[in-house]
Length: 397
Image 1: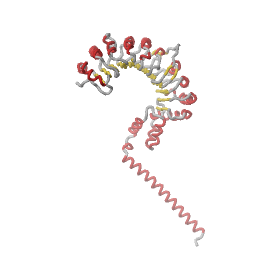
Image 2: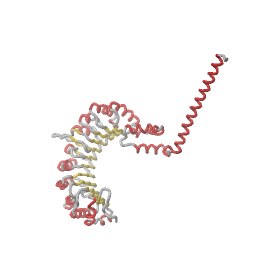
Image 3: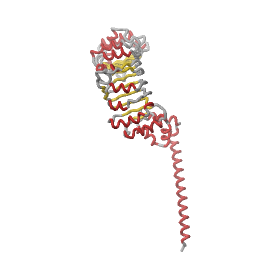
Image 4: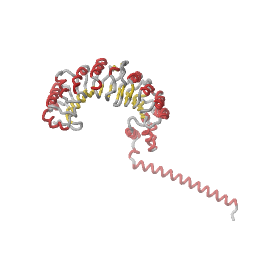
């Protein structure tokens, strides 16, 4: 029978052998992982791409602006992607707060923007009640000096006031589904002296104010208003405006537009108008005479384009610098007089006009071909599209 010492010695020997086998197994596991990584590199082309190309692919795969969840998901795919995401500041310069619990927003934003280093920031803030929105405002205040693009969705006066900070580099402000007063909106604009683009989208409603306090903003170059109740131009003077888009001019008021252009005297180059009342087409003329340097003109008509072309037939000096015109009459029949007016328009504008795009119903194709021949203008190098959105009825030369 073995002694106690002999049994203890055998146990120690077995324990040492077990530990040795564990180390051998661990080494084999590591070697297998290394071999698997090597195999992945061989069979997966993306793993062999230069870091710069992989980074660009990942950036292109993100929504704009990137949501918090989207970027964090990229981190979890593999170690290579995580390394790329964490060491590339541009991944952390654009954030949509969708899915972020409001109380956690300040800390997440701080971490996010720290990784973005000193680059400018783009933010999208979603609807939240005031008590929750204050968390977002608290997070933004410290970094307002870096915000270049800001989009607000579903906010009201109180939320706008909560973020009426100084935004010295803010270049673009977008409001969507927002219900606020012009007074509060102007407070935000006062804090953004370098704002260049203001977008007031469909679903916004600005409360009417009988005593507006006008504001002159010296830097806004682009103003887009969508919907019937978006923005009252009587509140604003924009002397640097180069692009103006108003989707519903009948609701907007042609007189308001004329007063705005008279007051601002902007170097306007692009104008988009939605004229939905047939009897108001001729009301455009006083406004157009105030922007003689206009280069691009888009009009969405409620009625036939006959009346529209008559505006230019009666005044050949209207918009003398015009280079491109888009006429959306896709829901209306064009009479022969309409095509005659179009031909007259093209003839008198043939020296400078480079492009005409007129959208008409599909059923109009044969009628158009029977009443208009635009080959002369095509031969001069003018681009002409007359037809549906995706089909040009104009024959090729």
